[in-house]
Amino acid sequence: MQRKLAHYLRSERRLNALTQADIAALLGAPWKQRVGWYERGKLPPIETALAYEAIFGKPVSELLGGAYDEIAIAVRRRAQNLLARDNAGETPRRVRRKRSLARIAA
Image (tube, rainbow, N blue to C red; front, side):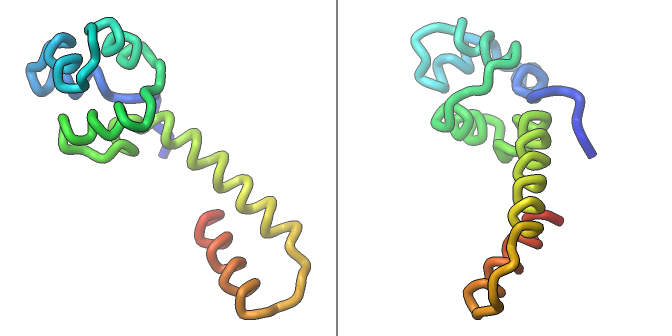
């Protein structure tokens, strides 16, 4: 199921009664403007995303739900393409590879 929002950072912040200044301090950001950027749709770098996970106690894939959904769809599509192009022999390694790709493509 695809989500409508790219992320839920603002709603999580408000749900936890935190200000943008609070979040900036927790992130170690020099100013709250960055928090506003992330709440308006700019995806945070991995270190910041993991800090948000620590702050809110929710996985990054949930906090950045809409972005995660879009990325997951693209990865599944690429896995399907790799499976479709694979016509090599059936060595144990290739069988494991196909199994891994099939799991990703599902």
